[in-house]
Figure 1 (tube, rainbow over the protein chains, first blue to last red):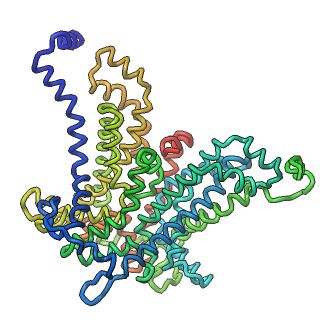
Figure 2 (figure 1 turned 60 degrees about the vertical axis):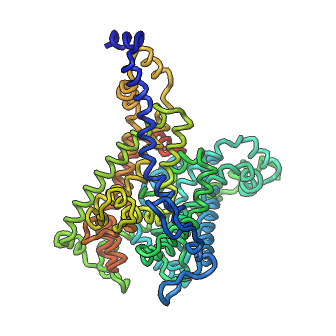
Length: 303
Length: 301
């Protein structure tokens, strides 16, 4: 086998050269082809949101702003009007920010204890964190429904059918992984920084809040972005635990719209979807490189 | 306050709350409320016939016996097996191909671009991703697939399980891709260079060096994806909703439908119970096989 290789190297025939060149392009060809369906889907989304007629799926024939009419008037279907997009956007923002704040607060507290303190059971808690992260929380949906129902009945505060209640659930699912990520960032802060805080008379909480958290900005930014996006894109928990229309988020609104406009108005659906995924795309473009590992680690359950 | 008191106080006061407790309290509270209590609740609920009235009425093992008379269960079980195995093959196999091709065969920048494109479906909110597929599979001539083949095929009606596998595979493959590409990049260059000097072909290097070194990531992706696929139904719910006539209904979605479409929380919990048990077993097995450190590295910290 070696001799054959050698001969080909010394005097490559035209055929061998051609073959080698082909072998070099095959990976590119394969990767490009595999990306084609994905790219065409997003291209369609963009094109059909702009035009009333799309030729061959991608070529916009008649430009129109009608698909974007939802920005200034409520979406009508017969006599029933859907909720205004701005109200849904506001709800989505409230939900995503609640998830984000809860995750950041709870994860930075727990991460600090795990990174900086020695206590019995520390290793077991870290073990627990990875078990919780791997465990698909979605299997517990029915039981969580009962928990929310019970809390609503016991406290007379709405946990079921309230954005805040669902945010609490969603945040709990995100917290184990975020706590782990932020613990890594705590580990990188030199001990001297913390000692200097104690020497200046801080207690543990003051040291955490005043001295260490400000040093932790990149870590906090990372878990904020990812918990925000997780909240922004959330569907199944909201779909199950939110009943009233006034609490609809964008994901629920789009689900309802798909049911009604699927065969009649793809343009509208595309425009609303594009409006909805805009922040995701922005984050995607700007954080793409760092995203790789983190996204995959941050995925819970079903993906 | 002088710093020494921080350490001395332990002797001065016989009992105090350990310093880590207040920091871990919110974490422990939420984890208890939404992981531990639900696990126990699910066990209890499975012994009741709770319905929309939300009453605790214990009926023993009746819900479990109901599996055997439920005519949909065999269908659902078969669907689940096909769905999990086929999607797993795509997720691991295609993920491996993408991971190796985008690192070993092409320059770093190009590979990064392709990987970024493959990550798009994963980043896209599920409803929008489902909408994209609904358009691709649209039964009229406006659907992408029908446009390509020039026929009108009602994909979601005629090939529901195939659709479900494809939809999940397209998101799932990127998980393997990321894990594998990171693993390939961490292989020392010397190994590959030494093989090249010895005259190994690219395919030989992939087969004899890269794939054997991906043993742990391969096992990890397989077990992780098995768990995800068993438990997840978000995309199925959005694209086919288990239909038509339960042809794409999988175990987890059946539990969901039983509980939230038919308001049979007790029976739904019993169906989900099997998933919870399997999930706990696989999770603990993963911890045991990979070990804590390696698992954390693989998950990506």
